[in-house]
Amino acid sequence: MPDSLTPETLNTLRLPIVFTPGAWQRAVLLEQSDRTEKLQVDRLSHVLRAAFEAHLAYPHKPYVLFEVVHIERTDQFDHEPLLQLSLSLLQEPGQPGALLIALAGEHQR
Image 1 (cartoon, rainbow, N blue to C red):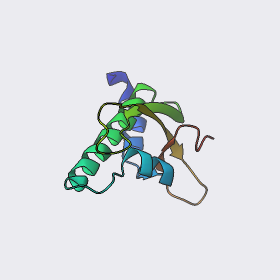
Image 2 (image 1 turned 180 degrees about the vertical axis):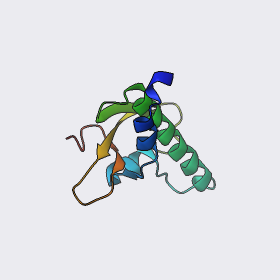
Image 3 (image 1 turned 90 degrees about the vertical axis):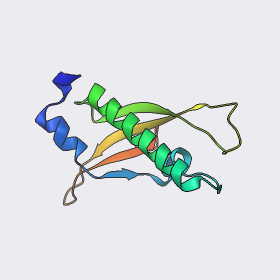
Image 4 (image 1 turned 135 degrees about the vertical axis):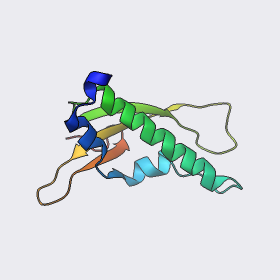
């Protein structure tokens, strides 16, 4: 992985990160509970780490897939399917660049 830490790769990791509404709702948001805020921060941190690891594994690909554990409801811990997400580089004319986290297949270029 050290070879992937080029200046270009490091600059990409400094870009703002945006989520599509679907990716945010399925990967980060939780139903209300006593520990919702801490759990959402933990889930957000996990998603960001997985996205960065995927980017570092394939730094020259404009679109990479990665997976995170997906828990539908806070009371369902016996079944933990994987949620497939994508990370892509957004470069729109006249707009600043950003990294986009979306549901897999939701926003392909």
